Image 1 (cartoon, one colour):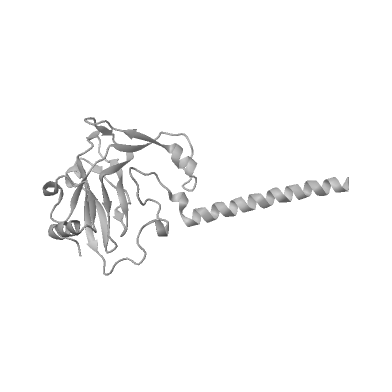
Image 2: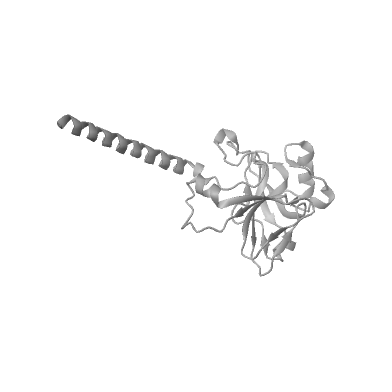
Length: 220
């Protein structure tokens, strides 16, 4: 069941659903969603000559992005073909019995601006500011002003509260984020396990080489 405006306002009033700051409820609360505003921080992807990015290499991911802060009253220009990470001005906290979906605003979509590539879901238990995956699919640059309503959040009620909600206890990577966050896919268990295996193999090779040198010395 998708929450209607009265349900959203009721849950906000109860305090288990949080959107802060919600400065203009009359404007931001829509019939079945809440409009969220654009923050002032952006992560831009550098033009680079590296052959590829290895998602499991945190150093490569960090070197690929640079942070930009837009001063009050200025705009961020999103050029055709660009992909940047932005953030919502609002911090949200989703209760364990709801899931939230990040959607774009139709008015921006008509300017060929999309707000997410794949990360359109806020799990039950998520808390933080939402990272937006901003792209310009059009032919003209578009000026994005911090504080403008850029996305909307809808809420669906689960059949029952999540048994293991998003959060620190389950090692959720983006819990509590305060601005645009680059990929932390390298922290996924399969990548962590693969790095540990490589490290163990490298250590084994090193020990084998040392043993060989010792053996050679004994023969001499």
